[in-house]
Image (cartoon, rainbow over all chains, first blue to last red; front, side, top):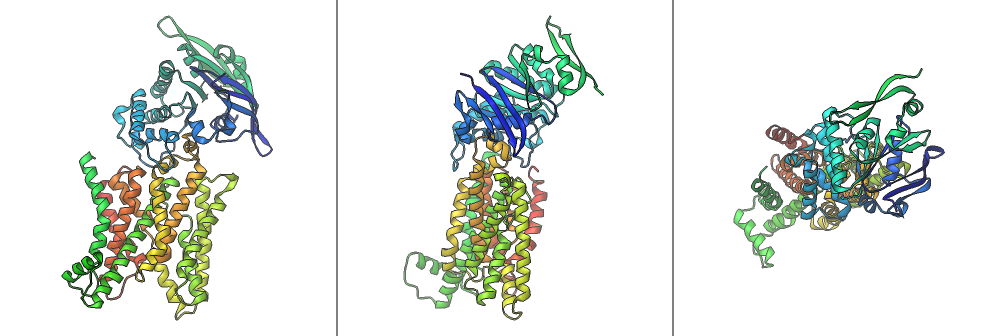
Length: 269
Length: 337
């Protein structure tokens, strides 16, 4: 029984299909990267897995049980979400934001308990932001803000995290900080992660850190290929997926190992 | 902010509405000697017999006290609803009237004055139409079977403008000697007619609304993350939003139907709260309740004494509140915005 399994999942608005016949499964400690061009339906697919959108056909199973019958707080105890860019309105403190991860365990007319505060503080410690806990989260840098979102998801105590382009807008250092945090979390806590990303290199990065990594290419409203990064992310596939000429190179990284990277070269015109 | 200072602020916020209500008993154009006021209070609370002049008793116990209690309730309701809506709509610029409750209530009051020529049905009509306006905004906002904040606000804008037009129409057709002034004065807001019956009738929706918002206040934090995130955090957003909107509407409609339209409180008092206690709604919501109550009493007492005839509340709230707000803004450097 898999942690999460999609069986022929399809969704559309009215007559227009957004994605159709998606099959995949993910187990403990795995990372699943969804790669595809803008507008291919990645975010819609993630919204369906989060239970925000209802499938048109097919089913999503969490630990073998259908998600369609689950209530929001039941889903939120299994799957946490880390948004792409968080739209900050009010300057809540970092701890208050992380504490919101406890909503699924808190009654509608209650506030979080002392235990919830402890869990939130542990989550902050896991991403290394304890020193910022009393700061307004509106004043943090993009990378720190993203780590706060990860801490909030960790406070949800779910076996599965969903990330929607978690490193968009981040500079190299912050991007690597987020990736390193993700790797460390998977190694330490056995989390599983589904990630939509525009950077196929991330898949190589995870694979290189000895995490069981799968990649799905999303094209024409469905997964055209699913497999290991080395098999799926090929020059030929990138050409069909993005209509670009690209090179896959292996670059030595010092300690005898090597990291594969994509070099985009030109569009096909 | 250190913990001791925080506790001190909380204690002040908790007790100040009571202090303000108490002080309001001593303020007014009609002079009642100080010892007499204390005696009346003592005797009324201990159910003793009072041999002071009837006028004294009536001024203190039947006029000033109900007015002070009602003022505190009205101010608290407007501010707490405003704070809740700001969180719900993720917009610090919305106020308690954003979904049209004020315009709706205003039209209801105008209609009642037109039809009955007296003010006896004004409360009922104002409450009913205030609630109706919010319901209409909510229905307009329900596109795609969801209620995105922006559509609710748009619904509120549409409904407000329709009801504002209807108010204008009511003024236009009103008899200019009796009905028109009644409508205009009602729209400017006043607590002058406060009696215990009003507190009993309008107090029920106000109390229910306040209690509901106090209970759900942490959820407003989560809702202010936006629909998608709130949902992924495990919240039934439709239900939670519905509860917040219903409670805020009960509170505001209950307040507006007895006080008329009092602007400003529902927009700016929550910001004063944000400067004092921060943005966490667990603290901000009760703080807004307290600050709204104190501010309304302050304004009402001023309105009663600075000139021979009363100045309508809707006018004074902005005149008194504006400079105070600017002062706090300078003092706290905006409080984290």
